[in-house]
Length: 98
Image (cartoon, rainbow, N blue to C red):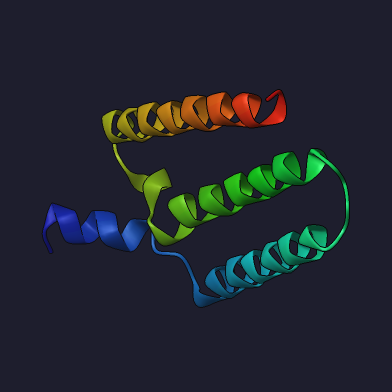
């Protein structure tokens, strides 16, 4: 058995965890759709972005196995996410205060 195969078997996730994460993603999607019908003013955008962030963290960590990657790869992903957050927040402030 090679080292790559040993590493792969050490961090396999069971089907039950996948199903729970999938149900959580469905619940967050339902919450997002429900919030779209409620008039919360400018808070709709913020809450939708927070829910989308939570969903993306779940997908990155569980389905894309990011939590099992090397530290350098995690740093690259963090830099990309930080750049995205900067652009979204600048766009939001332009939209909110225009």
